[in-house]
Length: 364
Image (cartoon, rainbow, N blue to C red; front, side, top):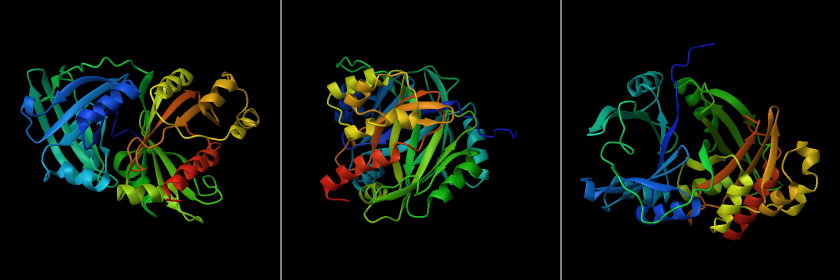
């Protein structure tokens, strides 16, 4: 087996650029159960932006907002709305990760640099990927502060309660027509990822729309990036709708793992999180499609949780509606029962559910 030239320990953090980080952070604390752990802004000597760091399980979500209209982050928000800018990867050697990827064709976003404060130092370096999304390599073995140098520990006055989120299972990118293979090749060649699974427009289609998707994964399987592109259909696909409203390629959704999806989704629904609805008929022949499962069907049906299977086991999943007014970024909640990959069984039901929402928005 070839040596993994880009060993990744996991996702370090995901940074979103948002119009109002103070308000967004409260939404993620209340609705999704994150706890605020750190902050950077004018009070800490950062004059051009404010950033709130939220944590739950192994997930760190950073919400950043610009403080001036002519700031590049303001341009990003004007173009894309609230969205993911940084998919940061935790590595042992940020400089090596940067050199290995740029030598293989990655476009540099920021050369390696050392950030330091009284809690130690962190080395970071960034490369460009699809759209305006970047990967930042984070080397933090010599650091024991709350997040990164420049951030202070800061708790919220609001006492949030977690909903059972464990870690980021995968992050999905939407890219333009004919771009999927280019970006799959980027992850294979530049980052040493492997192609995990391929879905074509026959696998992922409804009466009206279709898309294609390939999933790439790093050596240890900790990082999975499905890449979607639109496919020809009678009407506008959800990928086209995303590209129209995001104004280009970007992160479509983050999938978050839980050990008990029934408890997690019950709690999220109680807090007002909205999910896509699939018709009750989906459950009529569910066990014939996926085989025996440990869960009782009734709570799954009541909560609208989908079940799918690959050749190693099954998984339970559900998708929120977009978490901002533009029909762009949303979240998936996933519990794996042996399945390492993704099955094909849910696409039709899921995409018909998305189409119903698109139709309500007048975008189908």
